[in-house]
Length: 198
Image 1 (cartoon, rainbow, N blue to C red):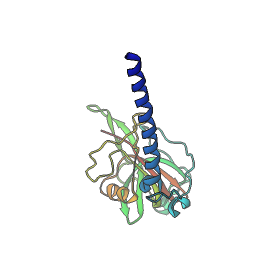
Image 2 (image 1 turned 180 degrees about the vertical axis):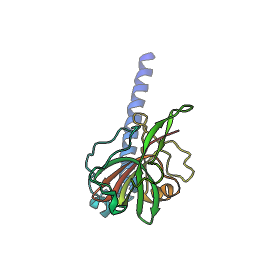
Image 3 (image 1 turned 90 degrees about the horizontal axis):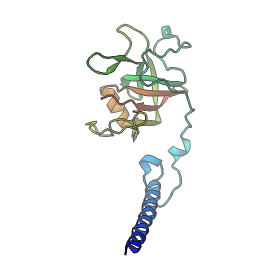
Image 4 (image 1 turned 180 degrees about the horizontal axis):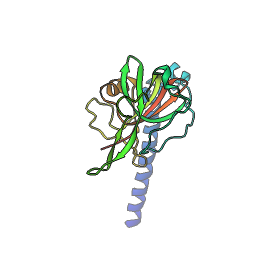
């Protein structure tokens, strides 16, 4: 009896695995929001996905770095403009239409808590402005709802891993900028990955 019960359990597990794999495959072809493909049987990429630029593999800064990242080639006397290509640990301070202003941030160790992020001191001109790309990759640490009640974070990195829309990014960061890794490429913000801070 034990042998047949084990056989039944093993068979059931195999069937569940096959069904789960099939469901996952079906989901990946029908979720247009995450894959960019149209809903339904067709798996042909949409025009937006076909046009999506590959993001270079820039070196990421230390997530909880305690100094501001420098941009030695940037001339801040020429007014606010885009940062050079790369990943900035920063936050968005202003959103005007599709243009976001952003600044570097650093981690400041606390006495009563672990610490918190801070931006440059008042009067500092270290700020940038770039258009937010139409195909921006936005990975939220707090879900996609306006309440920000969800925690959607990679346990291994502490970075957001929930893909949300560009409109959610613009609305949320217009109200209050979240500490993020901001990737700039060819004068545009192409990726924003939020850093989880309790």
